[in-house]
Amino acid sequence: MFDLKTLDKYKPIDNKMYQVMDDEGKVILKNWQQPMSDEDLVDAFKDLLFERTTDQMAVSYQRQGRMFTYPPNLGQEAIHIAAGKVIKNEDWFVPAFRELGAWLAKGVSLREIFLYFKGNEDGSRFEQANRMLPVSVPIASQLVHAAGIGFAMNYLKEEAASFAFVGDGGTSEGDFHEALNFAAVWNAPVVFVVQNNQFAISVPLKMQTRSINLAVKGVAYDVPSVVVDGNDFFAMYEVMAFAREFVLKEKRPFLIEARTYRRGAHTTSDDPTRYRTSEEEEMWAAKDPAKRLRNYLVEKKLWNPESEEELVKSFKKKIDSEFEAAEQHPEYRVDDVFDYMYEKLPDELARQKNMLKNYLSTVGGDK
Ligand SMILES: Cc1ncc(C[n+]2csc(CCOP(=O)(O)OP(=O)(O)O)c2C)c(N)n1
Ligand SMILES: [Mg+2]
Image (cartoon, rainbow, N blue to C red; front, side, top):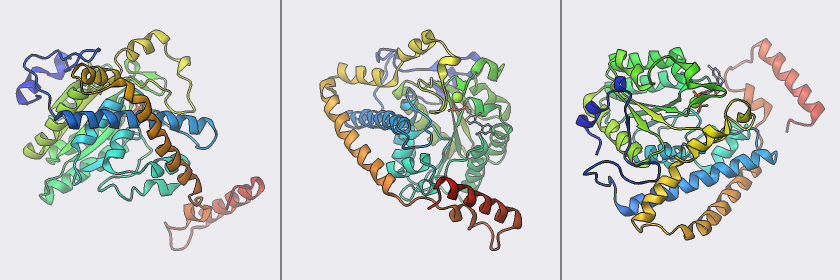
């Protein structure tokens, strides 16, 4: 179990990484106890497979020209499933954009996810997800929202944490530093989760920072922090659960660096073969989070890998029908883009609206 003593042993300045399983799914800690029931663990693995299947299908929908863009999650799923198991209904979820499994756990529907990446703002409604913010496209800007929410939770004396996600690239933005500082000064119960997937589009981590790691960035702000193996479901689950308790009890933020690898492209518009080697990709494929958890379950006789194909088939059916429902959804209209901010549209925006409508009428776009 990850506790205060463990936190003390994994000081970011020593650059140690908290890990429970090795790359083959064998537990490497002494006197370690499984942190959840066998049943919950099998559920977690099914959730992971569901995320992976959805992700693969989303990439192929985009390739078929049925969706505008999509940021693949392949390889980062353990972080998302662990977060999904820890974040409670009353907690706030402040997303980046690459946390699919955690979104689903919070109650975002597949249909909304597909609508969003089809460019339809109805996909940001998150109707069944309590206390979930929409994606904030400017990188790291969501972190200041999370800090403000944490401040509010503390002020209102609510027992609710704010979970905020960001990538390694996002830690170079001013907003990251402002949010950490603000959250620490104002006793905000915020869990900052950095998914360090080694790249910000084509920029590798070594060109992103001279810091020894990303967790160490919490030290100067007095934000306790730790580096965790982001491909190790147990390590992620334990640290997420610890962090939630910690921020609520101590009334201060916590920073997690989840070390992982983006196995797919940045988005479907990117070609990673232009900036990374197949050796590196293979090295990380060997640390795959699904493989490690599957091996652990098989070893404990909790999982029959032969049943997986049927399960994935049933997932695919469900995902396909949700995608088809998203395709039937009414298109977003140009008027919807312009009509809700001002009572009377300013001249410049009126000009832009006309220009866009004229353009769309020539290409047959606006409905
Ligand atoms: C302020 C800002 N600058 C640039 C971009 C374009 N952009 C979108 S994603 C991205 C890289 C983000 O990298 P990282 O934070 O590591 O997250 P990852 O994509 O790896 O999950 C960039 C530069 C943006 N959305 N916002
Ligand atoms: Mg990144």
